[in-house]
Image 1 (cartoon, helix red, strand yellow):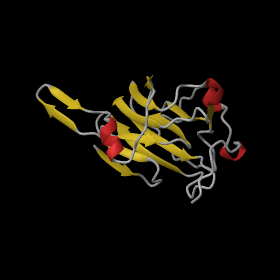
Image 2 (cartoon, rainbow, N blue to C red; image 1 turned 60 degrees about the horizontal axis):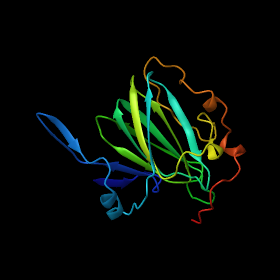
Image 3 (spheres, helix red, strand yellow; image 1 turned 45 degrees about the vertical axis):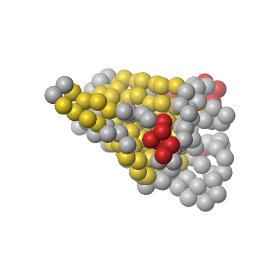
Length: 190
């Protein structure tokens, strides 16, 4: 399992090994010991699975507030997404910045998004399925978000050819801008 830091070092790209032959393939998509050896010691408590029928479906930017904050380990089992993490940690040198990565069933990459980040993705292919592990149970009272189109974040969402506007949930059309979000995570001293 290969682990590399992205432009925001707290966010990691994880590449599990995949072994193929005439029958198909085999892969350990999660190995607690291998991640711990790479410095990632997390206890996942829930797995989530989403399917987005239409390309250009945008889910996010979501997070949960303490004490129900979640680390997320995200992977694609069918199709492709462009995945984004936004730093919401006050005092962080990368506060308000984002990092993105291509995840697909083909490249088999995963992204680890730690507590203190908002998470979102846009689907690039039809019938895309995303699975992710989280370190805290879903808690509706702590479920929050940031506007996907916040001009201060200026996220360059890559929409598939022929898609002019992303497909959004009602919830995601009403999220506040980062500037209107009260601090919810502990201060990070740089």
